[in-house]
Length: 532
Image (cartoon, rainbow, N blue to C red; front, side):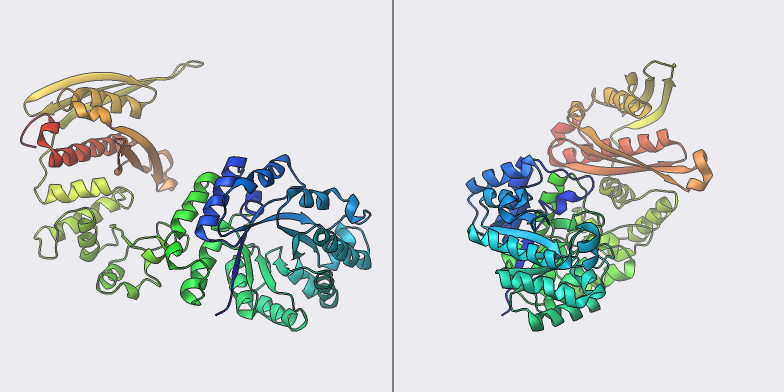
């Protein structure tokens, strides 16, 4: 079976992505997680570039790593310095990392225009640098920067650069598509050509500027490289690097190559979200394999087929990568969507339920009006139970009013008044808030806690507004999605209207009704009254 090495450069190349700044503690946590997952090589940083990376290489020696080897990144010596005089090379040695990954120029354009030196001196720089690091006990991976562009411009010279690295004793030669502009067919062709003349094991380092970094990495693998470099979630400068989160399952599940093993592969989504959290980045919902929508089914025809046999619309079992199947209910839904979703929510609904057609029709009507149930499963569950006659309202809102006073140079003040009815008792309350929605939430909560004191446990944790039909300007409809939590779980609700206050209030009411319904199902005494 072929051997494949995974080389992760999230902590160096990934950290060069706009908006990402890992602390030293973050880098150590990610290192530990990558090791647990089974990554073979972790590039910890560039010790010659900043104090944080110097401290990282000191601290990482205390981590009890089981699977990963640490690499320090740097460059070949400067054109007019001897290796022993070069601060970058000495920083690599001082890092005490077992592996040094150094990059050098493969494209004659960079040698003459960027380094401002001769082609011959560049070859000597490559050899000197590798030999110097090896003399100090380090294994050296040579990163042939801009190799594919260099090969296209001057194939003879590009080959000379990696032959120099081979002669100097590099243990891996990594072919880099640094500008990310190469096509998969060209990458495969070049790697096959290089393998004819270079005996040192090869690797690939692809950037994603043409949306081809994963494809180029897999083509290089097919052509014979043994090491694939990339980052978690494809983080990296400009458009990012090859995404290991897509490459790993492709190797395991498509090519049948064991790189981390089936058990660790089930933690792929966990790894992706762990790194994303520390990077303070959101994972796109449609990210392959691990995105929340990667196995989401919305069209009625799709769902009907998936319920019969998941292979009809899923290329792998989502559980193999730690994900799950998701069925979405929307205006595109059929009966199958609703049945599947109801069962997910714990509602006993089947195709013989007399209310099924009415529920589907109502959902489509509401989505036409601007509602959206994909992220508002609590509102969906309330709707289903109301139509089935299994829900009795806990309260009735008779009216609500909100006034906002804005005075130049002063903090705006919003005051809300509500009148609610619980059974035969009417309650009229008022509250001030830092905005109209906050004021309404406080006033409604103030009125209801007289009857349901446990409502004090829940709070709004997220609030999103989407303008629908923006061509209508300020007269457009808006959709409000809110997320509410009681500290143990959270749920989403939705409201839609041409009036943002009404849309917000509807979503807030749903959030409270849903929580009361769930609490009463568990324990009628928590409702504060019998019969609900």
